[in-house]
Length: 205
Image 1 (cartoon, rainbow, N blue to C red):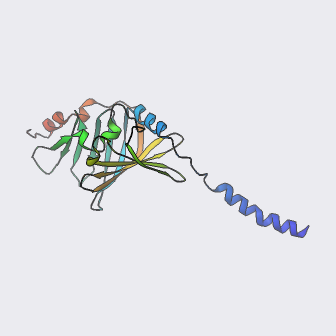
Image 2: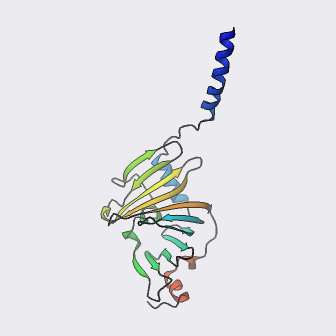
């Protein structure tokens, strides 16, 4: 009897420890991730960005799918990045020069900003992995793999995008971590207008 008492005393804390551990999260199916992105119409929140040189930037992000996103960087970084009208524009607040512009389709962000996201397309997903809390997929435009890739991190219950890592055509990597995201909100279309922003900043095309 005494042995059984000691056995129970030893087993109790061990059982409590096991029950307190997080359950192994199941890998989120690709179809559910595609559905989440297709159902994501508008969102806003804050972000932390780890730049290729290791420096860290913060700011606010606005998303309006399809094809539109806006990054407003906190001081002392005066940068502003807008995707809209099938283009991406990078504004340098320290300069009166026109923003640097290039087609959205030439960036890995086009994978998640597309009107119809289908991650099950052949050669779009190059890697998938999961751990206790998240599922990570690496995707590319199968028609233009040379422009780089985007690594997306999702959590489940409900499915939500938490961060991404972009590897560009030169191999440089930029990580964006999303925080305090709000979904399904009203966003003015002017937030994503490159010409309107150029007028506000009195920048000539």
